[in-house]
Amino acid sequence: MDTIAFNRLYHIVTFGCQMNKADSERMAGILENMGFERSPDPNQADLIVYNTCTIRDNAEQKVYSYLGRQAKRKHNEPNLTLVVAGCVAQQEGEALLRRVPELDLVMGPQHANRLEDLLQQVFDGNQVVATETVHIVEDITKPRRDSTVTAWVNVIYGCNERCTYCVVPNVRGVEQSRTPEAIRAEMEQLGRLGYKEITLLGQNIDAYGRDLPGTTPEGRHLHTLTDLLYYVHDVPTIERIRFATSHPRYFTERLIKACAELPKVCEHFHIPFQSGDNEILKQMSRGYTQEKYRRIIDTVRRYMPDASISADTIVGFPGETEAQFENTLQLVTDIEFDHLNTAAYSPRPGTPAALWDNQLSEEVKSDRLQRLNHLVNVQAERRNQRYLNRTEEVLVEDQNPKDPSQVMGRTRGNRLTFFTGNISQLRGKLVRVKITDARAFSLTGEIVQPGYLGQEKMASYSL
Ligand code: SAH
Ligand code: SF4
Ligand code: F3S
Image (tube, rainbow, N blue to C red; front, side, top):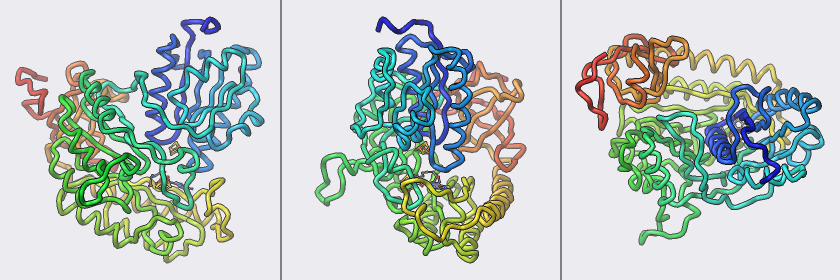
């Protein structure tokens, strides 16, 4: 311990998905527990953590350009500690040290909770690489969360799927579910701290519980995502529960029914389909057909007609023909998503599809991406019009950074919504907002009296 000078400043840069954001909050908690203080400016910091993503090549390249700048700074400030965490760290391991010898610590995502230990080794004078497979130990540290209203709670780490384009199983390891008790305890603690919304996280959250012991008399796993929702839905003072990411292969009617039944579970589903063409889905090893995907969405909408549905999709997968791409356009046209993340296929090291010889040119991929994005934008704008003149429940999260007279929050369907109001009175409150303007990606409205809903009902409030 004696080598750590206190009041030192840290800075974390986070790339990638919600799992990385959740890991960064845990690492920030560990650093603050060690006596570090947060610095908004990386150039003032004594320790910088890059929590990296390698899902596509451009995500990975971003890291190298950031790192280059700080590696240079280290030549003049040798006490600067540089850490690369996350998925690039896991993928590259030792190779990262050869590429950027100024690095002090390279640590995979499974080691996030061990940051203090690993830094001790660094402060003892070692250059450390921690990428071996470990069983993730239950986190006893307190994360430093970015929000005071919404929080992420991991329920399952890793992924056992083998989608042929995807690096995640290589970098995040095999599935490890947390126990329902540990998850509920974390949620209860968040409730006591005043958090109102929780998003349960997993790369393939429908796999939750498959690795936990126990089966029902019918031979079903004792712990499933559906059972978990029933188990945690009544955590006091938590008003909303979401979960992501769902896999169409395992998305059950039982789960849909639970979401319809449990009032705190939001009608918001993130179910990536990746392609609207059966042959491509097969090449991707996704394990479902586009017909099955459509049936899932139909079932969701039968139980919850207004459910918000978002997804991810890839264009330009190896061998994708124009006609196969058009099947994706058709699926998008038919389903009308509330939100769609689109990406051009990027060959990733260590994945089967990267080695195939039927790769498409960058021109074809970017042309398809543009065409799809155009469709998505037109659709999003049209679809958002349905909110016009409706009254929506909004959970207020923050001030609008572009207009301090406004606050912002999300509807149950996860639509970003702005309205006039005072953040010091409204933060963390559920309010009813009448929507007066609907754009492609956000809404504007005005508060409806009485302002508060749910457990926060306070009739005395006036604007
Ligand atoms: N577990 C989730 C998503 C994980 S990665 C699922 O199964 O759907 C997030 C998204 O990145 C994926 O949904 C996919 O659309 C995209 N993606 C993953 N690998 C990619 C690659 N090699 N090229 C382009 N996009 C990719
Ligand atoms: Fe990747 Fe497939 Fe796992 Fe999603 S389910 S993380 S796409 S391997
Ligand atoms: Fe990226 Fe790793 Fe998430 S590769 S998308 S940060 S799991």
